[in-house]
Length: 107
Image (cartoon, rainbow, N blue to C red; front, side, top):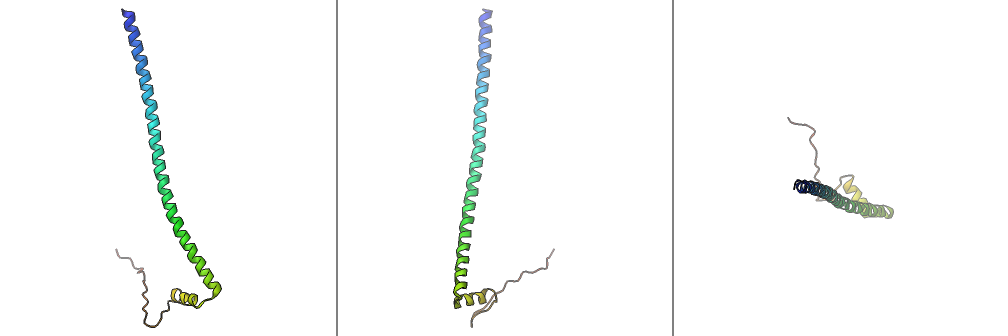
């Protein structure tokens, strides 16, 4: 009778140990999946940021190409654009607004 009880106790301890090991393995798997998901989300956000930056850079590149073409042509439109942007010149009746930053800091 005692032998049967000892066998049952031993079997219970072995099964309990296996169950604990099984649960630990699944906990580790789930934890690593959660970490992988966080990495996936951060990479997805970074991809979106980089694609936005890429589109902005493409627009800038197109603008630079257009300016280069106008310089090559030495068109009157380009001369007027330079006068307006760089030299702050205006046509008759136009108003130029200049924003000046105040260097004084108030405490």
